[in-house]
Image (tube, rainbow, N blue to C red):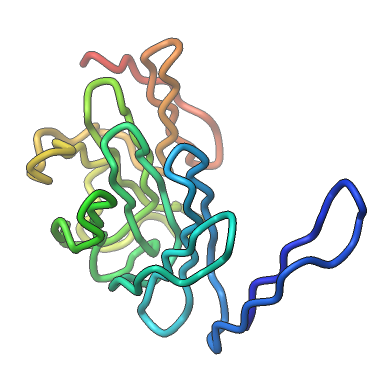
Length: 173
């Protein structure tokens, strides 16, 4: 329900910021000097990382994936209604991707991958694989015929898909 900073040099409690909601996730963008915090009330709080001043509140609920080079923050829940794309330059809604899922980003090619956790019960209805989206237009450009949670490795240009085991897909195909 609150954000508490800790001074690591002194190992002492720092600033305390009550947000009033149950927190879901937090991402630090050191280049922009911001902290992004999501809560259960369908909001993302944008904070100044030095002062913890609340700069703005944006729409979105769930986990956070940062694409710092493209100034985008993706807010998602596995099997949620949508992925919310936030523009971090204008601090506004950039767009919506229908149907949520785990999000991984390929910043170099400006793509994002959206997939789902697959448990012992199998995939959800209509789950055809990891969906690939253009990061600029948010239009779907492909579907990788592998079910699971995507993680992109930029050093090898490979997409890892976790589905009770790890599968490696070539990032170019």
